[in-house]
Amino acid sequence: MQLVIQNIFRFVMLVLVQVFVLDNIQFLGYLSPMIYVLFILSLPVRFPKGVLLILAFILGLTVDIFNNTMGIHAFATVFAAFVRPVVINMSVSTEEMANPSPSFRTFGVANYVKYVILIVLFHHIVLFLVESFSFMHLTLLVPKILLSSAVTILIILGIQSLKSK
Image 1 (cartoon, helix red, strand yellow):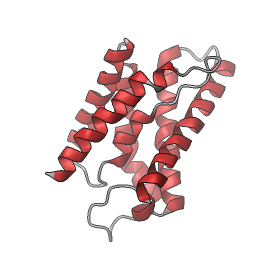
Image 2 (cartoon, one colour):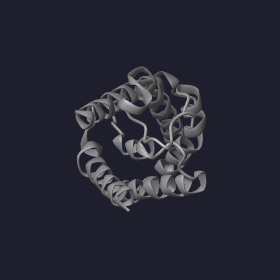
Image 3 (cartoon, one colour):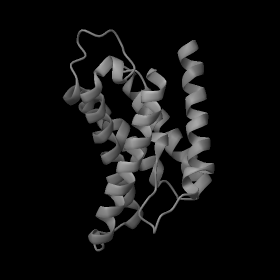
Image 4 (cartoon, helix red, strand yellow):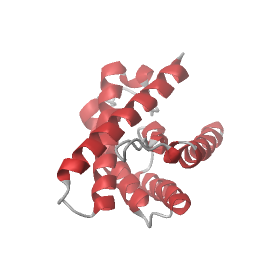
């Protein structure tokens, strides 16, 4: 029951920070940190896939409702949740673990960083491709994906490092 309450709190806080703080940060149109992805990253490893996809959809749809973006966050978040088990299997061997929540402590620093980088990159690539709905402006799209991903990854790793202390 404590895990459910903790995840509800995490969901609400990440959406509020995303919508009221980070969505108001724009640097020449290239920097858009999206830390709400941390909710999907923090769920236990063996979380039921169907529930994971539903929660990802609700998370993305909530951000879409606040931003009036017609489903692009929902699509990108569901995609990130869909590839999450594959990325976890690529990043770390979890056979010996019971059902850990991904963190520096459970995955190890290098594996956790790799896990965060891959999920955030997948999310941001899908999000910004769907947002632009074109491959015409790759010279503008690639820096936006890379800068936003880098800042998002740094914020997530910073939050997790503070959490582990």
